[in-house]
Length: 273
Image (cartoon, rainbow, N blue to C red; front, side, top):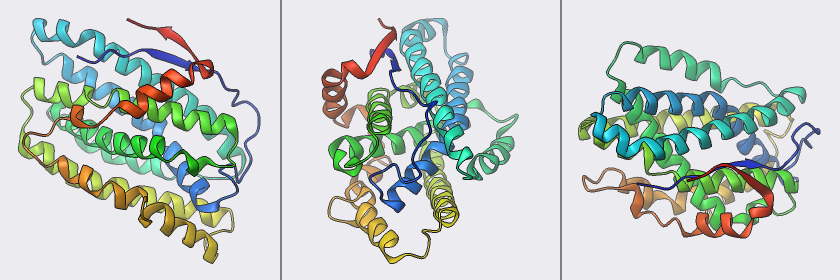
């Protein structure tokens, strides 16, 4: 069982956001903006999938996991709120979120199905976010020159994603979810997530007039495929999800713990256990 606290990030997102807020780097700004666009709907989907699966458990197991699930829901709801505020600033800049409408249409296909399908998708996506979170925490230089409040937002979010990386997976296992469907949904989620991220990033770059600039794609190649790039450095962690003995707890959470300890001035507890 994971001990989760709910934290309120102490930043002001009512103030306008610079168009090139990530250190003036067009690619990283567009990619992070794309990810943020997916979060409000995505986080609510994660919350709903875990809640729906909890009712499948015996009263004993519900009691055993109740505190962790409460913390998970609280953290995800806080992420949803903060990214909604950030996304409102992006909308004012003329950026259009085409990711969320696609996601909403796809989720309709799950209506009336076994709740464990939605939970398997959540567990798969949480593995993605944990990989991304740990990469960001290990390479905060990605935010060199970035607006401090936005750097704080992304690293706080990353720390909490790493912190609650076990929850959806643990509940899936507690519901006796199929291993075949767990890995099948991970393959599908990989394809869908990466496609949506690419499409939204390209759309954001096009809107900003940065799509056809060589510097944009040089930056993209470095961030994604460089020696310490996001995709290159996470290939092994991605593959690990297919192991029958995989457990998210095997991922090191030390960077998350250290960031939360060292940056307590940036947030305040809402509730804790």
